[in-house]
Amino acid sequence: MARSELRPVIKLRSTAGTGYTYVTRKNRRNDPDRMVLRKYDPLARRHVDFREER
Image (cartoon, rainbow, N blue to C red; front, side):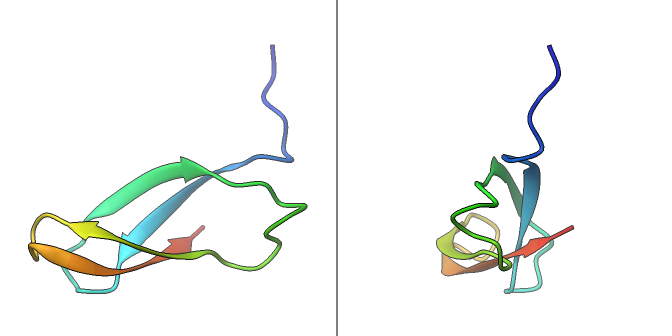
C-alpha cells in the first residue's frame, strides 16, 4: 500500500544549531507553508523553534 502524498514525511531541524531533528508527517492541505514548531531540544536542554526542511 503506497502512502499518500497529501501527508508527506518531513524533518524538523533545531534552530539552536545542535543538528537535532524530529521526523513527523504534515497535512499539505492544512499547512501548505513550511512548518515551525516549538519543541524540546535535548542537546540544548531547552525548548527552541524547529523548522521544516525538505
